[in-house]
Image (cartoon, rainbow, N blue to C red; front, side, top):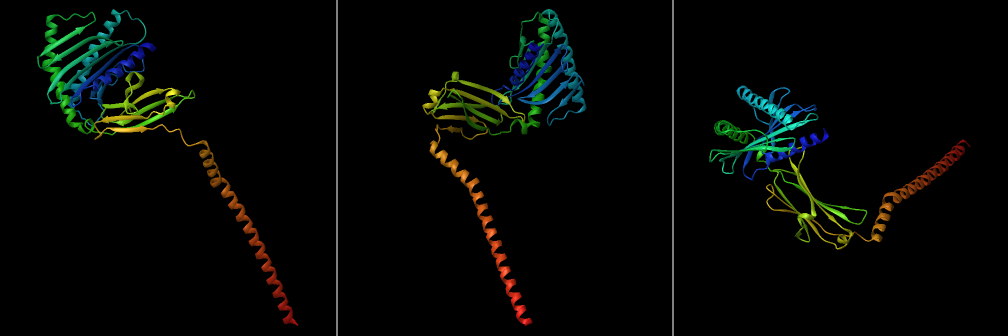
Length: 361
């Protein structure tokens, strides 16, 4: 079961990010549907609707409702239409998943079928094509590619599913007169109503970090976080020259919880290389930046140990010894002051008593 659930998570992440992997200037609207066979804490069937990389709505088979996640509203008619479309997809994927489970002779555990279907609006605001990928237990089994300019539908399958001429012609008309027009219309409307989300620009926060190892080496990491949109170029340079990609680890684009993204690239440095005092630079280019951003790290062995020791002693003197010495001086002065006051009082009292005695006489 753990293996199948790992496939579930991995494929869901791949499909979700694939929904946002469009060319700069173009936009996509994708549905990511998942049907689960077996006992899990998840709903049997869910659909995520992604505008580029923003989740705009989802369908939950438990409540059988389409739920909006951002500033989009569905009137009653559109709500019923969406619920009907996703409900029909639920039935289709359930039948397909059970068929494939029997075909591959799976008897126990959790099985998953996932389908991603996307339409695209090109950078010139012209409708692009529409593609569909269907996978079972993490293995792609069927693809459909609708070419809107040629009105052609290419279907490729690895499963024991036969498409005769009549069925292929039906599917082509289904894409040409229903699926593609509806998807493009929904994409254009979503872009208009969610332009503040889609077209926003958030600058990356870039840091160049070095983590030393006990062995004497270190790891240099270039971290960019908090940026949107997701496209970013992050480069590690050594002495002004880009480090070879095969030496760099990381580079995966990861989402933050606030809708922005982060990326990290790291380089392992041996103790010998560290002694060569190379200079490292992290360079980032992003749509939110007018120019590329360069963050430098220059090798600095640090101040001599004698300077460090004298600095520490000075801090101790100022912060600890000086206040104690001041307190002792203040206490001594207070004692002297009290003693002097008492002597003056005694002398004054003696003088007053003598004067009273003289008056009596």
